[in-house]
Image (cartoon, rainbow, N blue to C red; front, side, top):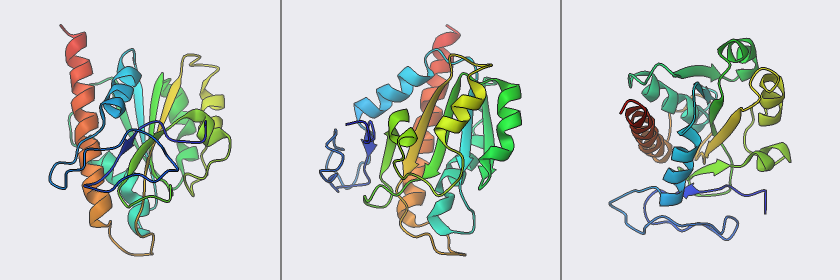
Length: 204
């Protein structure tokens, strides 16, 4: 079924509901881990990347809606390789289309809150089909379809990955929930590790 995420990270011991029907996390409350499929999907995505753009999207004022932005701030401090560019897009990623086109990335990762009807902090990678067919992932206006249509003429080999994080609270003037903060830090750590490993393999 195309309207489902590819692979999932779950905080602690919770099980995914039947909506996803995919590989589950180990049931350990003390050791959050990503599935091997999740890690492999990221590695495959990064393998042949020449320019990677990572987009943090969200609203800083609305609680967990800022979870993608929080991940990006961690990435910005990580001294990533020069083929990786971070974009702190906030609520208006479409304002960066000119910069994306000038960069001509062949890989794009979009980080955003996504209402998947799951436990707060759950993370999923969504296929393009799920987004372009109208699956409700985000309240923000930029769609994968729009982004890819804009960049495909100059980057025909573009591949885009959407990473959604389940929010807990989206109330105005509230901080990130502990669940989303912890999940964001786990994912940022994983992504930094996989990017650096990819870069190390290239320099051997």
